Length: 130
Image (cartoon, rainbow, N blue to C red):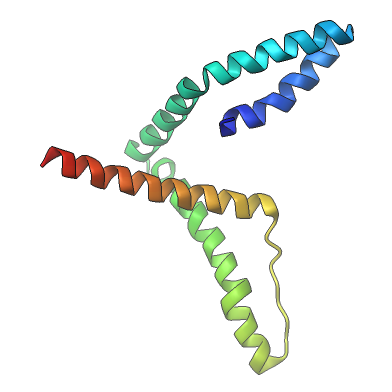
């Protein structure tokens, strides 16, 4: 399942159970909605990609830069936790740690993965044009 469907599936399930008290009927409706989501995953992903492209093309500095800035902040936290603070601890004896929630780590992985895929796609398009 795509990331969007993975996020929406539990929400759909909870909503259906609240709206349709009949257990068998709610299971059937939930299955049909999840199937429809799966069938339209490609269009949802394409729409998500268009949103990212429009943000990147924006003339507003903050709109175009918030994703890269967020990635840099997360990378800075990782660098502090695993590079700078351990070295400081060796010399100063203090143990600073900025907790990195799992969600933030996942966001970093998605962001870096998206950047790598995007750059690879750009390079392939350039080669095909030549």
